[in-house]
Length: 69
Image 1: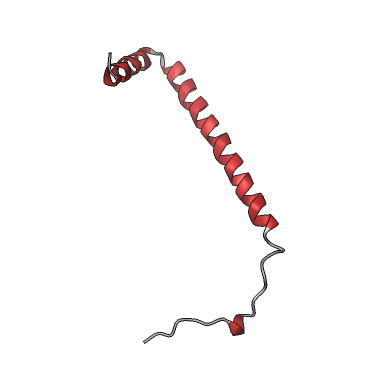
Image 2: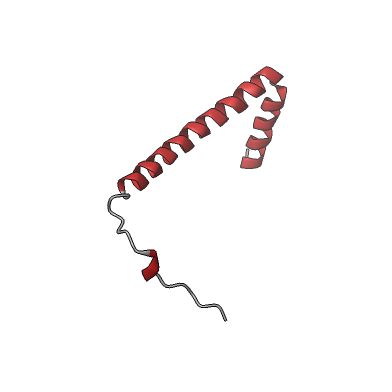
């Protein structure tokens, strides 16, 4: 039994489930992915917040902009 047969069998089992069970699976997967994404978002936010005091403040008048031709 190769991989495509396993996938086909798995999909047949999913099709045989009731609508309630299908919705429960979808919401569970979406919830788990949401929690994982939230954890990465929190870590990124904490990293950004910790870098706020370390960033040097530059004066806008001293910055250079590309000249338009």
